[in-house]
Length: 178
Image (cartoon, rainbow, N blue to C red; front, top):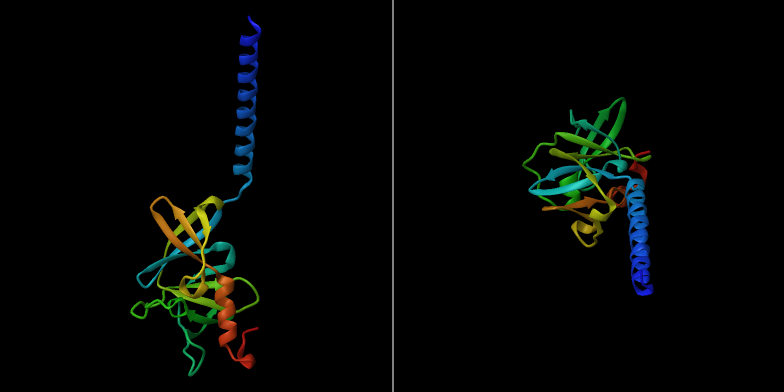
């Protein structure tokens, strides 16, 4: 074998080793990345997703006791497992007309807040890779933090902390949930 042929073989061997090693590195990185779990939901005619990690639970909506006054979007109080929650119409917070739909589900916000979001339809359990989420701002009052793109599916992913912050700002200091 000539020196030139040997050099070509060695270059090809280096290339194959590098490709082989990179393949394992990509597979390891992809394996380490946990999928992001989301709930798909309908609010009026719009579809959104909410990260499951931001929720303390999802419960059927039973009776909501209306209050005589309250901030915009507050439907009333509901008891879930011995605890009272201030129930907000998610559509009202997002500026989406969902008034014709009776709430069927309560999404309990994770954290110290006793807040639940009322929605009419939870329709999907989604698993997303980090590469399928794109930062997104300026939509629905800043409540959509990311855009989920999975093939033809495009959903705004709600930022629960932003929703809770708005509720806190709208609630008089003496009436905040503890």
